[in-house]
Image 1 (cartoon, helix red, strand yellow):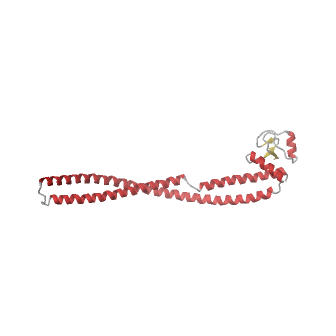
Image 2: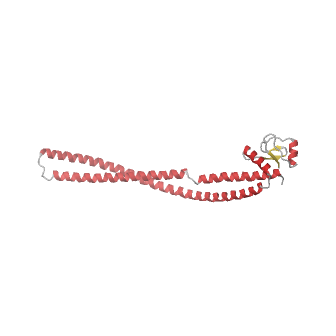
Image 3: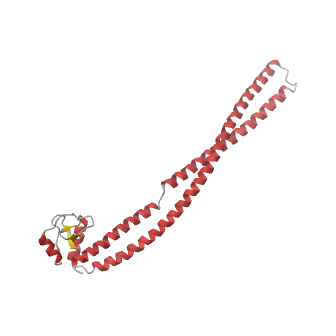
Length: 232
């Protein structure tokens, strides 16, 4: 294998390593999080929070209603006990009972409204639970597949690096330096295939003299893009 062919082969290894490394980054990133999963969790958290708030409010209002009922009963017992004979005191007691009754009516309406909120929150929580369970199952399946791909990519990259290292050792240091510098300038493509008289990287025509030298195994550079030409 000539030096140019060696460089082209090295470039193939470098390209494959680069592509697999990029894919590995994507796989690792994909395992970090999922917007759909996060949204499902947020939905459930909101539903739970709404339900808990409603339940706490319902409990507080119920306790308040119980206390109010006790007050109404106590005031009514006092009113009808016959122990209160003073006209003003009787009038005040009746007014107090009327006020308590109005508050009780308003409280009962408020409790009913809160009960409806709690019922809606329970329905939403159930729906959010079920949706999250489905998404989690799908996510776990996906991450298992991604984890498998991650391991396969890591192993493939490790093997390719070893092969690439062994191959690079067969190339003279000066030529290797030239290749690496050119690859850096040309976005990883230092060597271009020469098909008939055309550089397959820039698609432009190569002079007959350069074509002849390239086919003789000499290191020739494309006059247009500057890449090393490797006869197809």
